[in-house]
Length: 304
Image 1: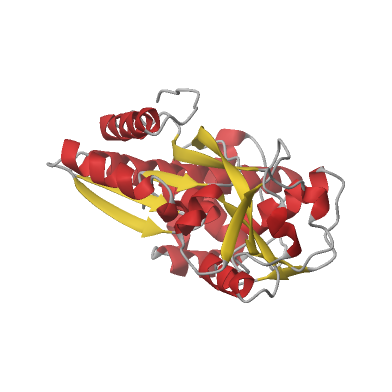
Image 2: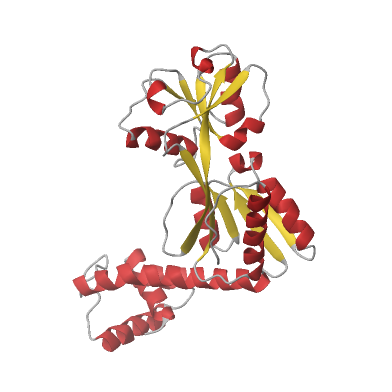
């Protein structure tokens, strides 16, 4: 059984007609019919109900169809990944979530450029879910994100857990908490979370942390982006939970207070394709750990 046989079979199932399937495949109908007959002979199974109009699959045919579409998708994925790996020595394309620009990602990219001057780097902002899809489609080589999204084709490496903080107006009643705050003290506040699109995202993560502590904030307000949320906090319209690195956004009258709950962290992940042994990605990971050492950031070193 060859992939082309599966391709022909899937077309007939989806078009429910040999004539339409042949037109879709740009072949004539008689050869297509023979290919399906040959497939049935090789399997020893009848795939279509005889005389049905439109064509209907038998139980065996439906089973084959469900697995055939997965095999064809995997074959196309392998093709694009192989093509990507073949050109990866000259270009490394990196997907990233925007909030990481306030942390060490810019320093990481700069250091990596200095160490790998022969390599062309391309940076594309995209959320974590988009990164997973782009890795599988061969559109990027590595992704930096914050969400725990599992996929059997992707390897996810936890780089570190970034602490979360609360941004409040300097005259807000919570601003006097010098040592930090617990999530339980925030549930009745006007709490801005961001972004308000492309879920799951950082706002999804913030909600989950509350729920994991058995807390249900009563006044969650979704905002488009972190800068807008912090601007509203500076106007004393509410408070906002941010990754520690977002303190780099300087707006007057803001105060940043640590969260004391142990689970109040935002993980930072590096995502690559499973079994991708691109040496450039290993070098990128080395740059990250080099910066972590310089910044005295605690981490558990991983390898690719």
